[in-house]
Image 1 (cartoon, rainbow over the protein chains, first blue to last red):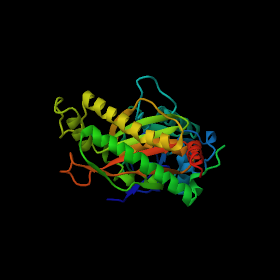
Image 2: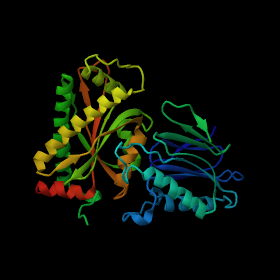
Image 3: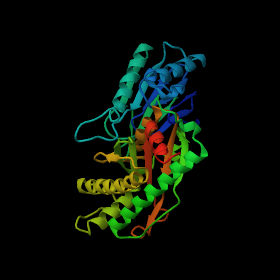
Image 4: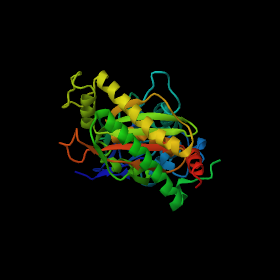
Length: 162
Length: 212
């Protein structure tokens, strides 16, 4: 068994097989896994906001979908991952709270995070293999760099693997 | 543009925010105590400036299931107010409040619509009491919206205020209060938490209203 590496909020980590990457209690944030199935070099980034260009204080690159995914991709290439091999899986982006009387920006940040994540993956020409996003509940995710499986746990729901 | 940065709050400003937390939490706890007709002891509230990574540690672990009630603040001070309770505590409070008229399944993490509605109302009353105290002290208006409830992992619930804070910096100011009451005295270290998450401009308003 490899090591289980924790990725916090606005954080990114890279690992090699047989290690795993995990983020606990993802809410409206999005967890993106990039994975090279040949070298097994894997990375996970936990982004909070969609767009770094819309925020004044944007020095923390792992906080934003645009800069976070780009940086993770770049770091993986420098570690020896091959760009043509890299694929992705994403989870999170839930709407944790909702109003009966309509929504505001804050409520929809999960959806925006998912959209921005997909846009960035497309820009980098990274194939999105699977996703478990949206809805209204939190998720814990564990990525096994050996198998490429992304395990998803949620309160009151059975575990699933995407 | 705001002149206040969370990273360089003076010790004096920090103390004032802490005191605001103390007063709000004290008033809120009194309201809760009257509501369930039980004595509630509150611990000394703590004010912490935390990195995003450290937030869930305050309440335990990211995966711990809690009941979270969120209220949006509008008016002079805008931001988010959150009240969090352990599910068992929420169930006990609902049971007490309904005087046994509504069967409460205390062993289940599931909350019926009636239970959710009761907990939400409790959150409304508590947040109202918390903010009324701050309003009286600062002379500022704290208007609140209809509360929203979620029962889920701490990390997921706290992602909402964390994201709001994430727009302005890399840290969150959290005001934590633990409480322990007679109704749930069978449990040890029962905890509820009040979180006040004002937008950055609102700090300045609150601090300057108090002459700091």
